[in-house]
Length: 225
Image 1 (cartoon, helix red, strand yellow):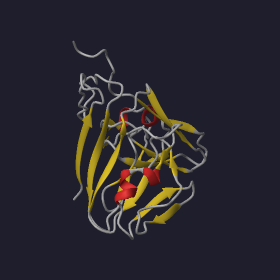
Image 2: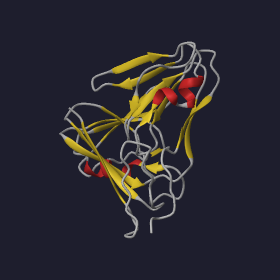
Image 3: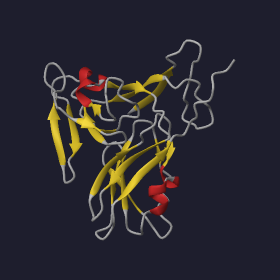
Image 4: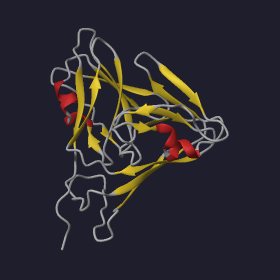
């Protein structure tokens, strides 16, 4: 079983912030940092994405090898990156991973630890008003994910409501992919994407390119007096 916990810490002592899996509570610091813990059993897959900003990066890309999940990996653990047509598998050695992979915010990857691991996803809470991932058309699969550390409802996203009949989304259930198909009015999956959860999306053969866009589900108001 996969256990998930979310803990966020404010960088400023005068303004602490906690992001629960709800959009109702404001964040009082734009320098909030935090982490998500996911316990993944040995030999099982987890569909993940990074919902934080890489504080060491000079652009929006996330260096997988420098993340805590890669550093904590035991020898024989594997990670899978989608290349547009299939999965590129990389294996951890004695000192973790050396994949050279740079991930986009909201990009899915699969992770399988060699032994039970508490996967840590950490970084700075995104302050961008929205984050997006390009969706490639013509029956291609795109690796997507929840780019914010707050649960989000897939069915209310622009991608879900604007998807043509026959488009498909794939959500990992722990042992395989649950496929959902769009109808006349888009998707009706009931799916809530947890913080750090990824998924696959497939357009129609005649489908045009589009975007997976997520609006920031929290605010950064002025700090409380």
